[in-house]
Amino acid sequence: MAELLIKNSSVGFIRGIIFDKDGTLSNSEEYLLELAKHRVDFAVSKFKKLKINNFKIFILRKLLNSIYGLKNQTLSANASLAIDSKEHNIISTATIFNLFGFDWFRSLSISQTIFDEVDIFLSNNEDNIQKQRFLIPGAFDLLVALKNNGVCIALMTNDTQAGIEEFIYRNKLAGIFDYLWSAENKPSKPNPKAVIELCKRMKIPPSECALISDADTDLKMAKEADIAITIGFTGGWKNPPTLNEKQFIIEKLNELNIQINT
Figure 1: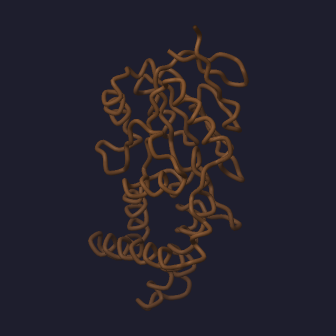
Figure 2: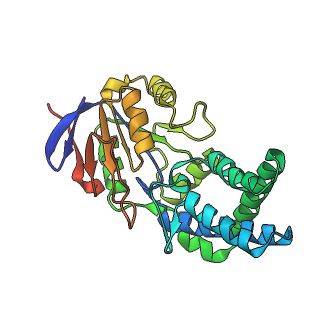
Figure 3: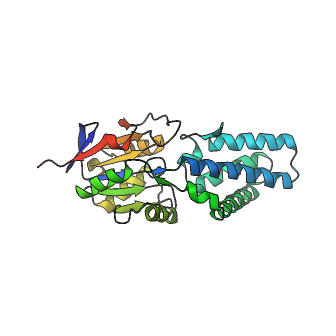
């Protein structure tokens, strides 16, 4: 087993470590901020075409900004867009539409259409290439150190499998992760059973694993799955997330080190 160190102090021994992606390994804030703004703008545009009055349009924008965590041109690390899956965000968006008098079927349909249209728009927007999700400083060195010391590395995210593959390809991480768990795996996070099932695939009990994330939902999930070491990470956002479920907390990934005792 490997000894895990935070700021050169031992926090325990592990055989495996589970990483969240967005906001933990991936610098996603700029991309997610752009995504949120376009989803709001596309929703407002669609509602205007449905002849919704201006006051209701104002309320719609205010409510969508709130659930996505948009405020003063920044995105909250504790809001749904930063934490939840696309599927969950579609449902929360549809809930807002439902409040405006649309039945649930139509609310879901409008929400899904808006999300699809925004995805197509962003994929065709050349400027968005500069806003891809690159590695947070220190992430690559940490992953390589863990790999070289025989620690099993898993990636657990609410991104799609295609999104994970793009992240790995763009950041030259092929061969780094031993196991992947996406939003398409069931159950998906933050269900503690997702961690338990992932650990079974890793052939390592949760009591011999650590998990690191920038979200309380992940940290609570890990504790409920009996993960030995839970680490909150705050360095992936301009406005650091508030984390109450952590066992340990770090601001920079280079504060985390590994040591093999012989």
